[in-house]
Length: 81
Image 1: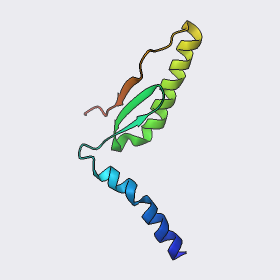
Image 2 (image 1 turned 45 degrees about the vertical axis):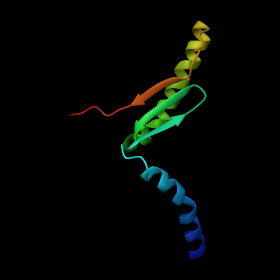
Image 3 (image 1 turned 90 degrees about the vertical axis):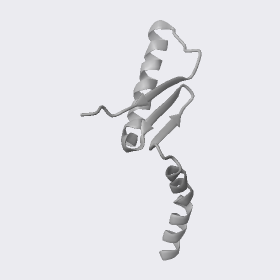
Image 4 (image 1 turned 180 degrees about the vertical axis):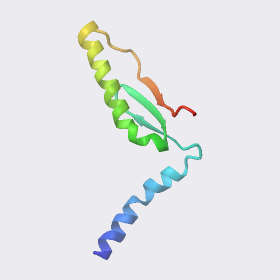
């Protein structure tokens, strides 16, 4: 049990190092159609944002026959209070 826990922690260390290298706290996610940029604290919204974008793009293709020529960029930001 202890050995498997240590192996799991060692396996996740590179991801922790990558996250620590970003001083701004901004992450990105890249798909075939989208580059999404977001604050690390808003990471829970990234799957929803990608799914919403993908659904909207599929609808535009189906209804209008429109296809984009480039990869689109979008960002998820928190509004100040």
